[in-house]
Length: 198
Ligand code: ZN
Image (cartoon, rainbow, N blue to C red; front, side, top):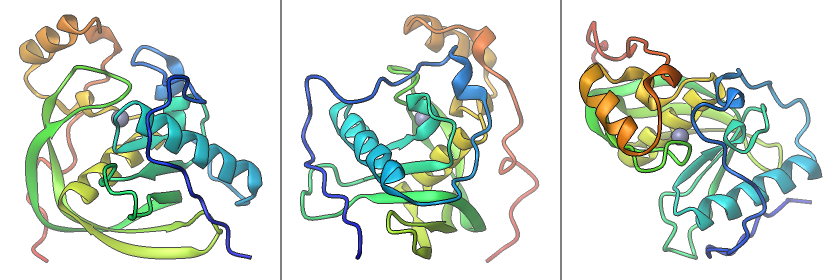
């Protein structure tokens, strides 16, 4: 039997899960691999999708809802009911493609804060889907960016960690009630040296 994960793309007043914010330790904890894709995992994915749609998000990682497991959900078409969302279990980036691209990012765990981050234009990513079936896809542009951002969450990394301009970041964080001390500054591995050409 093929499992289906049909979740209406609507905003609930009381979403099933609470989204943890930067400063909360669970966001810095590396997430564990999922050994079996079972009903419990599918229910978690469903609850995460409902929580994500309710918060106007296009991606959500399990650590953001306090569950340190390697599961992310992504839907870059929240306004298109006919397009199914992606559920990625134990996702691994196999290849980075194309140029590195700078664009603004935000995060449901750091609401209000937007900063520019470098990401690869495309990625090849392998994962298990909600039926437990192994899949490999190529993602480009916004989808690739969201997948890179969400996989970072599984490793305890937040997008603000990559921001080089400390003054600007500090300002932006304070404005929205966050603190610089919760940032774990690190070099973006894509920043330099340049990626090998495709
Ligand atoms: Zn995020």
